[in-house]
Image 1: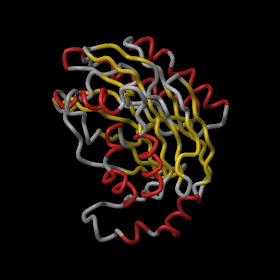
Image 2: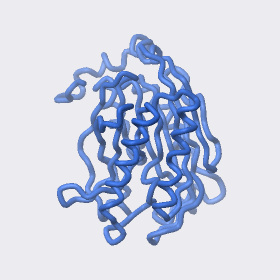
Image 3: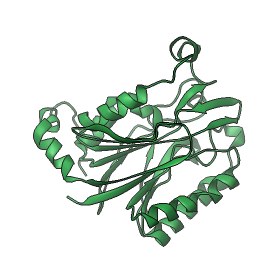
Length: 283
């Protein structure tokens, strides 16, 4: 199994697309300088939350063109966080994986949308995929998908070595239920992410990379205090590396993917569950 060096970006998102996209290359440069094989940005990090009225069809085109160019120029795989894109007359929250030649390897559409906000104008995806690459088998999920073990489980059964989770998870948000903001987390920050990321790595027998946005975001009628806490978790250990604040930052780690093979041998979760999920295609 290969050793893969991962870079997760905890990006501070502004409302200004041009400002956000102009800052992307500096992170590629830093990751390249540190010999990273793949870089992952947060969910909707180039625009923040959008609605149909704010959608600009040029944004997905320009974003994919830039990531293709930078992936090729720096010889690095990349996960373009996610963007809002109109496909077949439907709006979706979609993440793209680029290889080190600048080609799109595949994409993933967010399956589980936030009901009080994005579900009002986005169409949820209903599939998961694992992409076989020279740096390992890569699966993607997005933000709220983290709450659903079924997503990670399907990725495990499709032989994922590394699961990336671009996120725009807030400590507090005007789009969250009142009970969440005021009853349980009024005076202390939420910690579900810490528990869930560790759990997903262990139960999926895979490396789990959580790349969240940072800072505060106000726009499109929503106010978010981002959680930050981007982290990397491994089988056996759970979370091993974390940015335990909501400031912009970079998280890098080289991982010997033999840990995935060892986890499968020790835990035997995939073997025990082989008859639970039917009709799931292998890589």
